Length: 291
Image 1 (cartoon, rainbow, N blue to C red):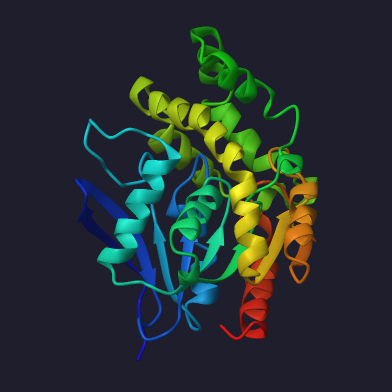
Image 2: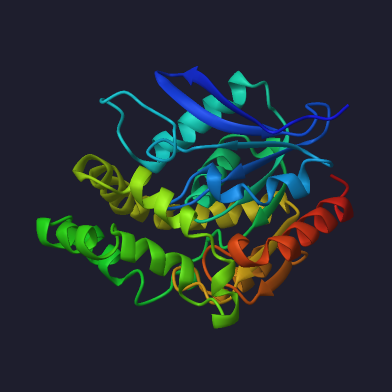
C-alpha cells in the first residue's frame, strides 16, 4: 500500500502543532526536528527519500512554520521540549530514531534526558552538543546577548540576523559556488516571511536566541547521556557551516567511540545541496544499527 505525504495538525497543551507525516505507520518511526530559522519545510526533499523505509514525522516547533501557540506561551527550549514530548505522546510514539539539526538537537536531547530509552538512534546533521562546535564569529553577537539581554544587543540581531539577507547568508555561507544554484530561493524566503518578519516574530526568535544559553549549560548532561546510553549516532556535517563547525561533529566520538562522523561539502542547510548523499548515509546507518 502506498502512503502519501500528508500535512496535519494536532492540538496539545493549548498549541496547534503542524506536522508532516509520510510512510506507513507500521514502519519504524524517524522523527525529523528542524532548526533556526526554518520549519518542517526544510525536510521537503529528504522525506520522499526515506519514507519507503520509515514512518516519517516532522513537526514545526513552536515559533516556526504553521504551528501556533497561545499568547501566553513562553518561548524557551524547555517548553519546546515539553510541547514536542506531548506531541509524541499524543501520536502514541514511544520508540523512535531522530534526525536532529540546529535547534532540533537540544530539543531532542532534552527529551532523551527525560526518557532515554525511547531514542533508538540519532542522526545529527549540524546538531551540536559541544562547546567546541560553536562557530565564531557567528555566535559572538548571540553570546553578547546572553551576557546582558540588552536592547542594543537585541536590536543588533534584529538588524543583522533576523533579516532576509541574514537568512540568505545562513543558506549560502560555506556552500561551494558551483552548488549555489541548487538552493531554492523559496526556502529562505518562506523562512523569513513566516518565522522572522515583524516585531512579534522577531521577539519570539530573540527569546529563543537568548534562551539558547541554557542549552550550552546542559551540554555536560547531554554528553553524560551519550556516555551512559551509547546510543548509535551518525554525525553528518556540512563542513562549511559557520554556526556549527566540524569540531562539534568530531567531539561526539569523545563520548560515543562508535559514533560515525562524515562531512559533506555544504553549509548549514546541507540538505539544500547534498540531500541525496545525506539520505543514503542515513538509510545505510540506520540499517547498520538494526533500526
